[in-house]
Amino acid sequence: MKNNYYFLFLFFLVTTANSQNFSIDVDLRPRFEYRHGFGNLFPDDADPAAFVVQRSRLNLGYSAERLQVFLSLQDVSTWGDTRQILDYDANDSFSLFQAWAKVQLSEHWFAKLGRQVISYDDQRIFGGLDWAMQGRFHDAALLKYRREGLQIDLGFAYSQENQRQLGTLYTISGFFSYKTMQYVHFSKNWQNSALSLLFLNNGFQQFLDENNELADGVYNRQTAGTYFEFPLKDLKFSGSAYYQFGKASPSRDLSAYQFALDASYKPQKTLFGMGMEILSGTGQNATGENHSFFPLYGTNHKFNGFMDYFYVGNHANSVGLNDFYGKIVFRTGEKSSLLLKGHYFSSNAELIENADRYLGTELDAVYTQKIMQDVQMNIGYSHMFASESMSLIKAGRSTDNTNNWAWIQLIINPVLLKHHFSDK
Image 1 (spheres, rainbow, N blue to C red):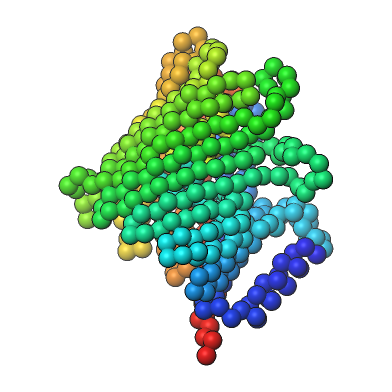
Image 2: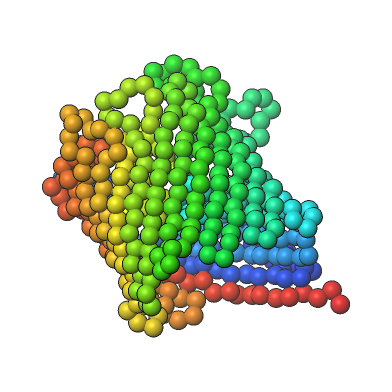
């Protein structure tokens, strides 16, 4: 019944719209995956996983002279997860992905309120997480300033799990689900260069600390840093540097850092690149201050290997990571390309018993083919060559088994309607 209300609302919006512009587009994304060590070392005496997951997303956009409204409805399902001829969705896979309004307050100031994607720079700290079928959104209010390449965003969020008569307890679990959030993001673009600055504060509510003692209220974590892009003759450099401080938990202080540098060179139709990223960590035998950096709300699948061994719902408060990589992207046809990328991983902090810090090497390959207008195919394969030390951060699982992952995906995103309304 809830789904019917959504579509009745959409019908009403279409038939009564008197705005200047209205659009409807869809994003259908079926993906087959074969997992044999994806995200973690493959255990002994186990069978690999295989499935098809699909995103079905409907986007509606509306704009007038000083107003924009955007709605995005989606269903994320695994093929076969609901019994046939069932009169309801057994897995409650339908959700509201985005619902926001943007109002122009003056020539340079805007307000954007509601459920929305927040994405900046290379998406290391804030990103839309488009690889994940469900994506990532924030329920937030933004105040925006725009003028001649200068952008300043002020963001605010206050999370509650429901409407209450008393109290403000927030018990929703999840990776860094925050009670409060405040940030300022400053960016300046030039012809071929860009620079941004970010200061972010997150408040987390936790009721028991590491010793199962009652925690008092909300503790705060701060993240501050910069992202930059600049050319040097035929080379393009980009990078970032962030520092996290405040509290890692109610009873533990935090002091952590991240640094990344990427260089790319693209003569004609082939791109060559290499780079590194350092994320600080806490030794496995360490006590006291926490030194583990975590990239929070970014598109983490984009970084540190596509097999998601690090920072994708895992590796928090761990030994950190040193990632050195090289890549090549070349055209294989008029409408196709192939990405090849290799990563060398090592722990940033000490492992137990002074074990070798080398964790493993990952090889990634992604083939992209445009089939027709609005239809694209991606095929991927990844292989992790894990060292014995990898088992020390992956719950002691054996490193003797093969760890690989293969997938194929279609992205179908046509515009169904794009119309300009006239008041005349």
